[in-house]
View 1 (cartoon, one colour):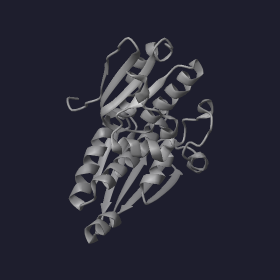
View 2: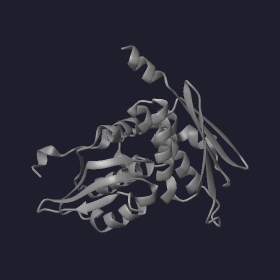
View 3: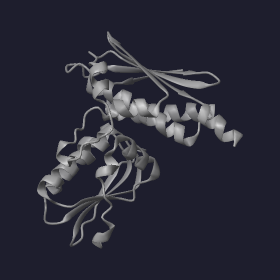
Length: 110
Length: 144
């Protein structure tokens, strides 16, 4: 469908794997996102960053992916940051309590 | 007003678009509309995730009931349903101290309850979810 706008663009640098998400992250694209994440999420050599600047919408499926990434990265003792969260999405992360476990990692210089 | 969609995740955005149109016309605030979009999508997610395994093409009926003070959205599916009361008991924000202890289930139902003014669920032959949002926040904003 033409207007379905969910897109993942991966732009890595020497310190981090960076995923920039745009559009609507819901049940219909959750599997696609999980598949794209799979080769990266277990790599502890660099930090992992999600950039939500252009994300318009998230549902509990998308929030569930964030929680599972948090758990995997914690287990690996690997860094994981979520940045540029729009206010509407921040509200949902606050309501569900997920924001208590998230960090922007802005001191990391990446 | 009624809408019927196949119980497939690809069509949930259509429900959000309809809801946006109706709620905008009724004069709901942007924040209220965003809240309703999430709550209604979560109800559709449940219908899709809990449909019969062999049912490739279940359907979801969505009915919008409007009056001067409120919008009710009724989401009805023909799936086997699930133990809504039991799931609701577990539905809460995350409070665990350790990330390793975080659980993922139940957040959708928690969001439905947190974002709507009233949520009623009837299970039996399929599941019916009735969610209501009152227009109070818009009115109070006008008074200020």
